[in-house]
Image 1 (spheres, rainbow, N blue to C red):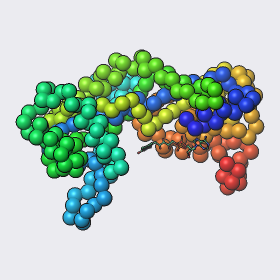
Image 2: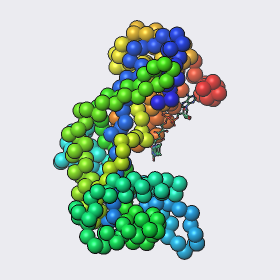
Image 3: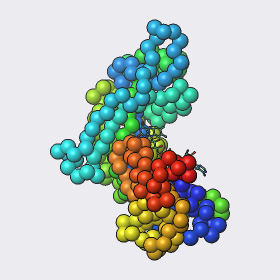
Image 4: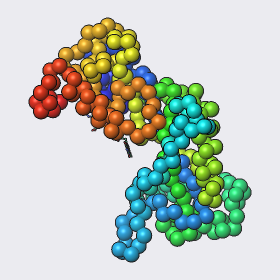
Length: 280
Ligand SMILES: Cc1cc2nc3c(=O)[nH]c(=O)nc-3n(C[C@H](O)[C@H](O)[C@H](O)COP(=O)(O)OP(=O)(O)OC[C@H]3O[C@@H](n4cnc5c(N)ncnc54)[C@H](O)[C@@H]3O)c2cc1C
């Protein structure tokens, strides 16, 4: 997003670019959700260890459920990865507020029973770390899938504005919600999804699909097009996730690094890798 913003600001100061700059942003189909108030303590909220014997929360993403290319999802764009997450201590009040406010109108209905009700009261009274409390019994799901790359970033009065219609992905979202709800139910929890967010922004300065600025913002070597033709700005390269023109349905730090590595080796003025690194 930073790269797209810098280019948009540069364009507003006169830098000619492809008209596609700021288009085709994707959130990588990210969804943050919780299996709230499960049957057992899950301990997914981190905190400083009070003693060596106290149980630590553990690292985030130590397990992954890979639902890509299964019988239910033969189409690659229906694939889904679900990872388990952990919440840093600083966010614990926020998460507790989110969980309790998103469920305050459902209690004591739904799948709640007396044990679950008591667990909630414990968390209200003694905070998110209370043993057998509803927040301590909450699992975190981080899921990645695909969206329609329909986000746009544009400049207006010196500020960048992100627009997202959210349309087109409704059917896919319903399916993902069903899968997550059944995963949550299997451990006695209720699915709560967080407000729309992503930690995997993609696109905005996408690579061209036809070798010109009409098909994208940069060419196959990362060079920024001057307009709709083949001419590029000498020495101006984009080398990060903003050039990836679609959701990937997985974490992509390595992919972003590979793109950077690939461009820095291929760029003609950068044949010498060590001097190229200095230049970059
Ligand atoms: C909470 C979280 C967890 C994640 N976990 C994983 C994971 O487990 N595995 C994984 O593969 N990926 C993970 N990711 C995603 C991973 O961080 C990104 O895929 C990766 O960092 C993308 O690399 P990038 O070079 O495109 O952008 P970035 O790493 O974001 O680099 C962009 C740089 O540009 C700078 N910048 C932005 N705007 C400006 C400006 N106007 N002027 C100057 N500099 C600017 C920023 O400070 C930053 O240094 C996670 C992301 C988050 C937020």
